[in-house]
Image (cartoon, rainbow over all chains, first blue to last red; front, side, top):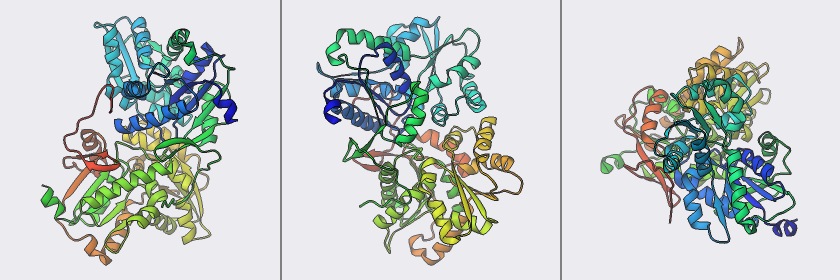
Length: 290
Length: 290
């Protein structure tokens, strides 16, 4: 198996957990003939409340694992990582041979194209604290106003599978109610597309709810037209790696990807690196380490 | 300041975030004359969905920081850490001069004393996956039944400050509805006492809702009567350290402690250790690291 998988050049898609599968779904819809390796760092998710040093450490480990799997381009689907660590990852790993791409600029471009003047942006605490989305919008248009709201409960709600409950609708309403007079609402976390119905229900009339994932996929396709050697045609294969419980990842992941996942391969931290750890089971009880 | 603080021998209280302040509150009620140092690892909370290696790493760093602040005993208030890492911490750091105490055994003892035969236990995913609470109950009574439910949304709900909302009541009801025929419900996470009203409202008639924190404090007082040299009388002083946003910690923490907090001191990870980092501000934008 390893010889066949390492002989391909898959596109790497990296997220803190399940959420990036909503981006992978759009990428595969746009470019189904490519091979993909998805890495969800679900054993260490959520990233949204973490300090930036930790986010950078985790992002380095995950991107290195994906390059180790033969990728020559990695799409950072996670808005938290894109907003905080993308430039670092690009400076450390980027070259003519290897690229790291993010979601913030596509999201900003889609929002500026859609807005009539006032964009609302909702994301994790860390994403919003970075103000990177607003910075990118300002580069595109000095006159567009941006309001940002942190919604730390929404990603955990979706991870729990509660996106169709009254609890989710009430939580979305509570967050959206904090915006005033926006005309476009950007879903700035890869979990939120699963709450899109709730967002559409509670958004005031005239407010457009914008999932950036299709724009991310369209931009990736345009990029790939210029750099096909870094993402060559494959056979539509998909591998999925997760640092968390692989059974749970496969079960929940199907909701995000919109189809069943292949058997999820486990990765774990070994001496500061993320390594493939097949057949590792979840420990129970007290764990004593040497 | 450092000379005056290091000349005392405070009791260390460690939690992943704010929650352990509900335990500190009971400890100070029971033993108000002691000095305390509280460390909330809120920059890296929640722990409940993390892999065990990460929990062990963080727990080591936090306990070492508290011993570094002059503590000779550390109370691990966090049920996740107590259930997964306590034995490891005791083996690594415990001696005649230094002790690490947890909350799981006091919680199990209180529950066994209260139950008529069937205990419900609600906690984080990691806490429940360990089954450590059930293991401890079995040691005390082979005939008592234990049902465990993971409630990953409740700690984030409380961290958001939404414990008095319909969202919290609906979420608590959804989790509690998963139990069948219990007579005692143990709040197995230090955040949950802030939801105690919701738990009492939704628990079926005859079900006793049990917050273990007073029992933890009573057991600590009994322990301290035997080991007073490890927790000598002080002047009722309190220091609070947090790895997260200190302003936010002070604001939210008052709800958990039931009184205003002293100025919160920031700690951050430096070369694998948790160090005091006064006046550190939250970074914004893209972070590029050498």
